[in-house]
Image 1 (cartoon, rainbow, N blue to C red):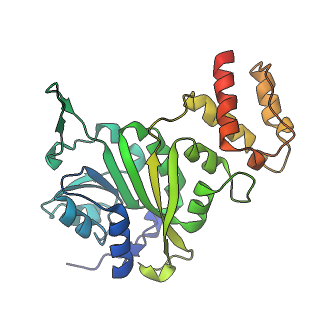
Image 2: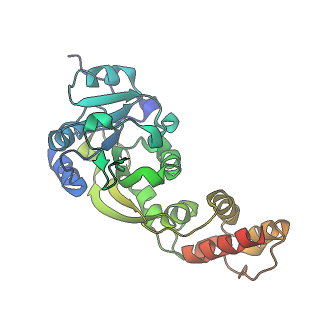
Length: 269
């Protein structure tokens, strides 16, 4: 089989360090029969040890040459597609033989476990895309650029706290579980990487997600300015008559404060 040349337009950096691969698989802890989806399997460095433990694995691969190779594997279901176009809520997991039967006899669809070495050039859009399908997901383990994970898990009033922090922390419990140096890849990226664990909250706050997203985007649109210049004007447009401290910058406001404001706004609407 000919050697696959990494394609820059797909952001391809193939994991090659056996020790790091073992550590990632240990962190994921796949169990036989669990329905799992891997985004960007590439040369199957992570795919093979995963499927050996699971028995079956669904993979999403955009590169048609890699997808062709993966189809020769008898334990993989290959979805050849841009991951941003995949409806995770409708992925067929019947072949994984993991459907559960409730006491009533009805078939219950188990939740997906999602993993992957995400293309760094579109990692944030992928995270937001998955947020739209969070109800069908049990957990997520992703290799990402370390500075992105630093923003994902950052606390309020820190330099890394951002729109991404708020939009993910309201819905997931997250932790940085593994540092991955550039030399663990072929070709090596120019940045450090890490693995993040994301577990959807069992009882997330009851908010209007679209309104929340719009509010947070406005708040961080000019992060160096006080919120009265950005969010304050937006709240006036919404005819919000409640109280909220606008004499702060966006990164100084805890996630819970943004959530509380979104809940008040929904009542007003």
